[in-house]
Image (cartoon, rainbow, N blue to C red; front, side):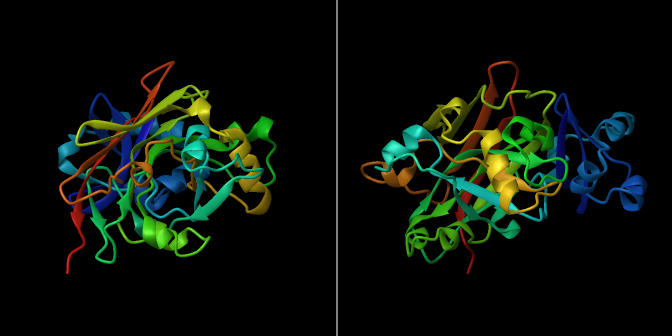
Length: 289
């Protein structure tokens, strides 16, 4: 099942994605019971609502503006330096524990929206990632049970303003300029992706492949990430955890490859056992003003 959040006729909505068509949730039902996709996950109502949404008139994707899959998650937690090849690329040793930082909701835009290079820097980098979307409350979850807490997966571009990221040992400033990252285009539920280690992620700029790796190269896999994060903080339905980026990032290239206005950035995740997730696509522009 694929679920997306979007603006339809300027109003926030969400719905089912099937055969390149969106089937929005009925407005009355959404207004009364489930105002957003996070509320649907919290109620465990995805299967029930999917039946209802299939009966609604379909909408072409070009009629909507995509929002991040979960427009206002309570938490966006990101894992850094988590692919083994990327760890080597950065000249580091595999860490004993996941390296974590946070992003704020306004740092992310949806599929098809414009990424904004901030006026303070030209060192704007790309990081394609697999993101976990939490489906039910989770606290101190064992790795063996972790996938039961996951609603599904999506693509995430962890856009990084590298000079600001490296001001100190804390990554947060370089990860939170508004509209520097993106998330989407939709959530793919776990029934379609039973094993997240059997995926392949690829990041392209203007059609050129810059990153390509299997998710089996993760140092800390999805199960261990959920176990670790849920130990120190309660996870809620709709929370997002980005799992890290493969090698091939712009700052590690010689010369560095920074994102510039006009660049088209695509993050694609395919599956060994099925279609995977799809492609998150955005265009870069300078911040206005």
